[in-house]
Image (cartoon, rainbow, N blue to C red; front, side, top):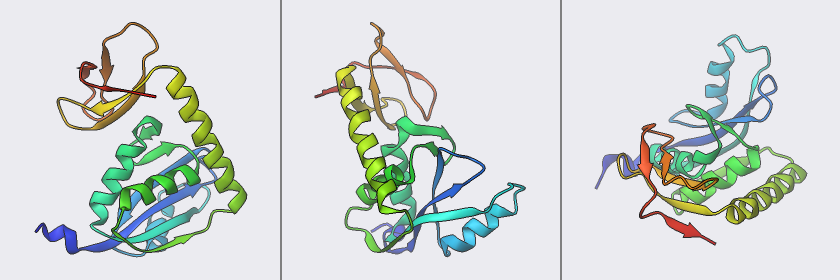
Amino acid sequence: MDIEENVRGWVYVITNAAMPGLVKVGFSLKDPVLRAGELGGTGVPHPYKVRYDALVTNPRKVERRAHEILVGELDRKEWFKCSAAIAIEAIRSAAERKMLLEHESVPADEIKQGLDAVANSRNEWLRAGAYTGNCSRCGTFLKFSIQSSSRMVKCSKCCRDVPIAGFQRVG
């Protein structure tokens, strides 16, 4: 058994008013409020807010899986162009049976708006010719839609062109 399977830690969603439309999905072995405070010392004009945190087993794995789910929304590093509600759902999906406790501070109407946006985005994605699969070079989960007759897609992790042969058409 991997020693990390027994480690408990937090996977969280953090936002900042100075960065509208961006959320940070990360993990920490200490309280996410303390982590947000550490980030606040980096010269950003507004404090970071913990919008959601979940105590899970193997937090590194849960965070990695949440990042894979959100790969189409990736802005840079651990920052994603999506609502807090979408990021929360990615963490819940990634955690599966590893979740021990969760705390959410996102208003219910914002969650509904985020989930509606996910449904609309998914429908548009399916209409555009959606595919999913893993990068043949680094194994990263990819989801994309074909906009042209291209037979290659750029991996968001290793940045290499990957042939789409073997990817599954969705919808």
